[in-house]
Image (cartoon, rainbow, N blue to C red; front, side, top):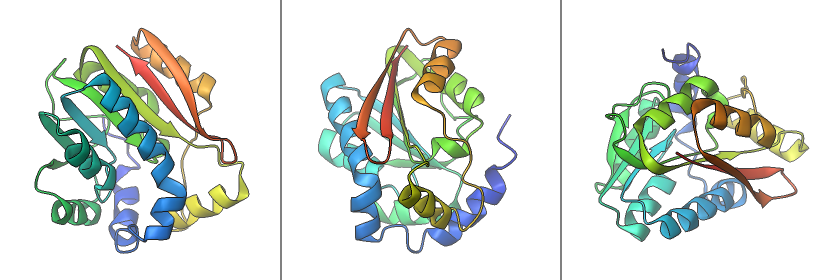
Length: 204
């Protein structure tokens, strides 16, 4: 079942989409986790990749352009974000779908990634769904942040239109979510210490 908060959140981001690509915002707050994801995908040589909560498609397009995998999918629930994403790249398959109900067959995907969006999902349901669509040996990579940082709290408040910014799991909670969904191995990579930002990587 989809997260009941998905519709109001997506409506907020329909409006946020107009300023989301501001270069300073992207470079300062979003690029480090995206760099970590691209580097890990390159090492894994994943060929069927899904970016969940893709927003305006900056990371998704980087994956398609820099790694040239067989298929790249960008999923989001905001029409405004997806409109920007479709303008950005025709090499990506863009689709409107919630994290908890992805439009892919069982064991059909090599890597599922999500950065700066997981706090909005029904987290146990999303992780279980990521596990379902991943092939054996597939990777789940989720970027998470620690909003105890005052600048990060402010950014997240602005980014959500002044509304709720959801739940931010700790690395220990991420490990529990992943192992509970059936992932075989879980590790946590620190991306930036000053924000508590990290990347949880789990292998099916």
